[in-house]
Image (cartoon, rainbow, N blue to C red; front, side):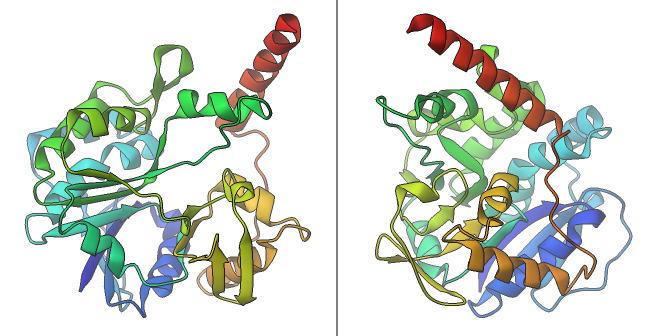
Length: 298
């Protein structure tokens, strides 16, 4: 049995259950840490629920104390300590954000963890210095690796302690300080730790920020190929939903399939872009600032 995990609030359980459904044919169990309350939830057949009162170490207590008034920061900060908690009884665990959806078997990822301690997945933003330079610079603003996917085995405890202490130090979006929530710290991981694999499989972590880099083929509803590799999972973060909700987008059928999967557990769900989201506003601000400096330079 392969062990994956995610962290969620009550309001996002419909995404958790859709994620679990996407894993049900791949001999996988999904461990879910709930951060808002200890009310027991009726179990899904491939979901095991965990609660904050199970994590009793001092580092977890410090993280909860610091971020308990901001559930987003709390979720992000708890990734390393939840992974460490699960490694007590499992040889390897993969963390995935709850807005990820699998399309093919994840077994090969766990095979990689039999001879690597840590798996990271790059954002694979565009990196052409001659065009779309804003994406090139995004690599340095928000981080080379996506914190929505982290694989570890039980030799990665030093890394998890380090990452948890980074999160305790600060979870903040401050480009000028080199900070981006829990994510930017991961840039240092291949330098500081051994046996780190940077996962370059084209079918892993396909998203709205990288799909233009690939040749994508759709064979039928749930069978996709990315640069001739099977699609493993899509990260349906907000940018992915914005891009793929366009009927002209090559991944629109995948978007519709995901929406259908979500509606099984929340029939009233409809994706609506949040223009007032603080990150969206900040991103537009930095883009306009970047554009202005580019015009001055030229």
